Amino acid sequence: MTDQDHSRPSGTVYGRGGADIRGGGPGGLPRAFTAGVGAGVVAVLGLGWAAWSSTAGGDSPPAAAAAAGPPTGAPEPDPTTPDPAKVQLTTGSWLLSPLGDPDTYLTVNGDDAKMSPADPATLTVVAGLADDSCFSFRVADGRYLRHFDYRLRFDASDDSDLFRADATFCQEAGTDVGTVRLRSENYPEHLVHRRDDGSLYIDKPEGSGFTAESSFMVQAPS
Image (cartoon, rainbow, N blue to C red):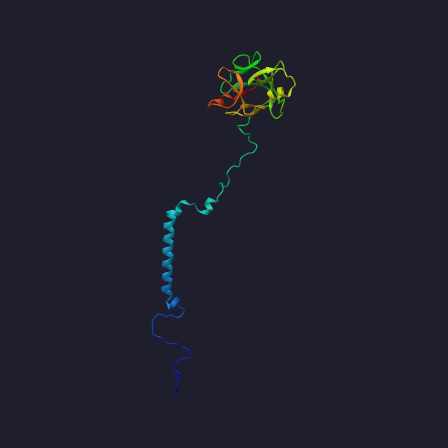
């Protein structure tokens, strides 16, 4: 008999009986043990995430929801729909009335312009004498509405630059649909304003009622 025992296959290692530790987890731990530990860690992390998202993180919407646009099929704005606030004054024949009082009109009171329920003045609205993007207002006898010492009156044109500027007014949207405000071309801080007695001046905006008092309805002559 020799020193080597041929009854054991060469290269085989024999140890104590029990679980097979070949190919085990880290440090030689069994696979079943390491798998169980890993599942436990995942479960703990999942519970932690749920708790965080229900408190600090719950107020923030998911990224996909935050970035979402309008719902599919939402109607697009129609570019052909007219703007209801669009100013309606154009060249042609018009009556001007105070806001909310369609039975009162701009009238001719001697040389002055005034608001009155009697004798409405039909105004021929033309391109502005000093600025054709604005307007000038002429009555039947050929006189133009202009400001003089801030008061509105009717005068025949003297063909001067000053007269043309005094007789030119630039429109702005009024307080309601279909109303206008008229800004002086050469005194742009002043607007046509109806005072308590119905007289008309170009005034600087002042007081809570000024916007309504400087808004006028545009009406077609009957």
